Image (cartoon, rainbow, N blue to C red):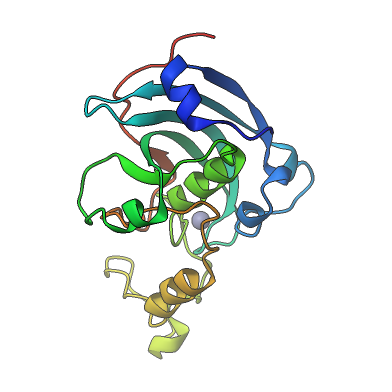
Length: 211
Ligand SMILES: [Zn+2]
């Protein structure tokens, strides 16, 4: 994918749409299954330059894909439906970016460029949407897996499932292994989704026009 001039795109309202194979996103692939055809899955993207309500150069990004993950509980395949929309705005210098306070606004500041790595931003966004511990919502754990370390051997059918003793370690490992974003970003209050999600959807504040 060619690099884009985000400032020019914001002024002209330029729009792009296309498809990226998951195999083109190596950092993302580290979190996906690698069965036959898994990496051939296509991610649909749409983006549009604009000037936001505060007069800043900005970019709307829409992502749709079905990602092949592995369930942390039963180890079988899990298809994560990703339907995400984000808006970013651009600043001119690293110093401006560093001066932006952490807040909970949905728009995220990025360091703008005349040769901005849109593919890198798309990959970063998909990685940020991945659950820390992917699990089927109706998953039945493999027999014995969660109970051996409790020493009971079996759990009554009506018992609440005990928390996995190493669940916190798994989450910590995920955080430590998370790839570094390739695009410079200001800190934001965004947190990763918690366990159990098989679908990720962020609110769409506006639809892209056809281009
Ligand atoms: Zn499962």
